[in-house]
Length: 420
Image (cartoon, rainbow, N blue to C red; front, top):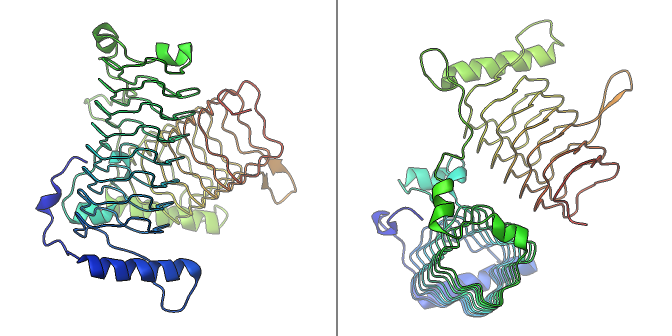
């Protein structure tokens, strides 16, 4: 993480006895017992203490100092460890299923035999807009750092490490099948006998890495950076070039007061069936990182809008026009996107858990499909989402998470990357 955790003061420090009592209450909480309480110790100083063998499922340790802390054999499934400092910590044989370790510091940590299936170790920068706790404390959010970590025989199946750093890390014998490793800095890493089958290595930096005996697809390796010449060829900017106006300015970004007025007018327009108010049109505008959660955005026009990292949780977006929109890392959990048009949109790393993208039924009984034709959806999360009838024709579905999703009648003509 790109900050000095010591700058956050004062840090609350617990004794081992106090921590043990908190862990016991958490176990009671998980068991539904009276007197139980969820373990929530964000930004605490717990360095050097022991969580060995503890069940910490769903615990909150975000931003905590955990240097040289021991988690041997601990269960950390679904835990929030965003931005925590785990440098030189011992997580040997720990279980970290779907644990949030974005922006965490694991430099020199011991993770031998750890089970990290679908663990999230991505660059946390795109979550900065929604992590107000870190912003208030003045803590910068950056890539996860697992440099020099020992991950021998760790299971990182379908883990996401996009854009993070793993220089000189030891992945010997590790399982990285289906892992998202795009733009991961793995220079001088040890991948001896590692299983990288199905891993996405696009623009991963493997200069100096030892791949002796590793299982990796030729086409995946070809997409990685292996030499200095490869790196030079990729030095040109990879981000989309923003459109500029005649004076050279970037896309317009409305002021908060202006946006609030626009949203209120749009809600009035929707509620009055167009008789009053004004339809929201943010096409081409810069709305990156903005909080639009729970807003009425039905029928809005947002073609080519910049909504990267935006908070759209629970937003009403029925029949919204989002063709070509940049929704990378946007939070669309519980959003209602029935009948929305998102053709050619970029939803890489977006979270659409429990979102509704099923067909929209009109007042006249017609059904309108949600359209994501030729959209980019790599590593997007559709867990328990409603995807009945969605048109994914020509879309990139590499590494998408579809656990529990309703997928009946999806159109997949020409779509790529979807697991068989």
